[in-house]
Length: 348
Image (cartoon, rainbow, N blue to C red; front, side, top):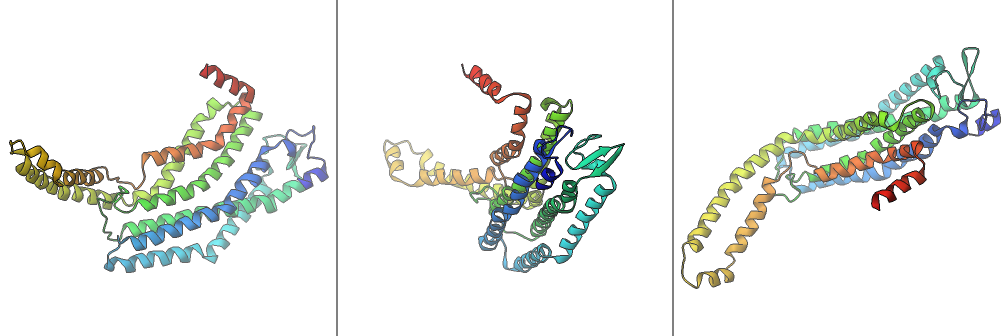
């Protein structure tokens, strides 16, 4: 901003896009970048909690604990790898060099002048602010994005290794996931990273609406594709447990189905064949009926056990979160007063 002001491009009517009217810097560095920085405060505690819960839950038999320990040590080693950081920095440098070689990719708009690059005689000349963007701002954002992408990938690998360990899942567990329900917290944790991607995509779509003939309706497939693909990607590490969860559910239905038959038969033999006047009173004083009801709740938990440790309700909440960055696009085509008026017209 200071460099643009120094060059006279902060507010410049001769430019197609002056700095003050460009949405990208605001969203990238006042929304996306802070989110990526503070994400550690949300994601790390959740990941630590998940790992502690897995260890203390009892789903790992003694002979499986060494395999889990190896998987965790590999996760920790790769998360703190200096080599990975060097590679990420190298990738961001190559991207910046690519922009220098092709200044039209700075895109602040095709064949137009902007605060980042000035079009003169069919040639782009990069501004001081543009150089700052290439050398400092953009690499910093890319490093954080790539770092979080790497952390998500190694978390997926960790869960893949855990899914290959013999687990003692309980089909009657109230989380309806055999004791693996805590894993959904990892998806809830990483959703903030995909939300950040959504804010960056949203501002790109906003520019399309402002500077091209694009409309919200024409961009709906892009938004929908982003939301669906984000949900699918965050679900991938949970899919690894489908086999063990399916086996646990089938075994649970077989075992508790047979037990339910025996319980029902015993109840029927004791109470169903009595026809005297005291039967009803005696049943009220006995605990047999409550035992049948309690067992029904247990079997219901087995019957509704999930193959993936997450519910549709949680998917819906995450979809709403991912859609949130695109809500402001409505106001680019329709003033706030018009939106409010239509809402009132709907209510009346």
